Image (cartoon, rainbow, N blue to C red; front, side, top):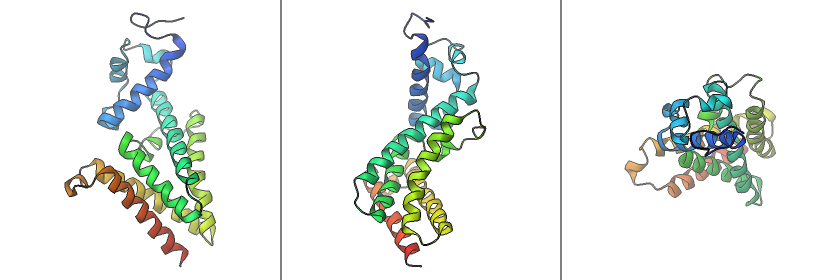
Amino acid sequence: MIHDMGGKYHHGDLRAELVRVSLDLIAEQGLGAFSVAEVARRAKVSPGAPYRHFPDKESLLAALAATVACQLADRVQEAIEAESEPVAALAAAAGAYTEYLIERRAGMNIIYSDGLQGPEHASLHEQTRRLTDQFVMLCLTVSDRPQDGLELMEQLFTQAHGYGTFYLDGVFKKQGYSTEVVVRKSVEAARAAIEGRTRM
């Protein structure tokens, strides 16, 4: 087995550790701070060690994005299962997205990063479909036409991401809003959007 810098990681463990460290780095400093060199430094391995598991920066970012999509899908599923009717479930799903974005600085901005759309990133695409399908199914349930459902999904993702971004960028902090308040506002906005479209 391959060991890096004092044998801290076995060959099979370092890949997962690099993804975990990447997630933490982005949560602290945003996507702009992401680099293979910084991830290696934080993981306490040599600068070349990550390339034994990821051929390039794009591959590490794709693995990170797949993890974000998976974690988001899990979080959204929990929110949906806690509600008994579709409108409330869909609004809760939007709130779950906003909450995760605030916690991790990661959402669609990571999942749809430039360069990750190719077929070589199959795991990312699978997890992204899992996430979006949760919203699609509920949006189609509350909409009369498929096109309306797709437009509603687009609106909900945009609103949910916007509420989280306003918090992260300091806009809502200046208003004294806590994370809980922002998530609640995201849920309320989602419900208003859903009910507005279903009355059309």
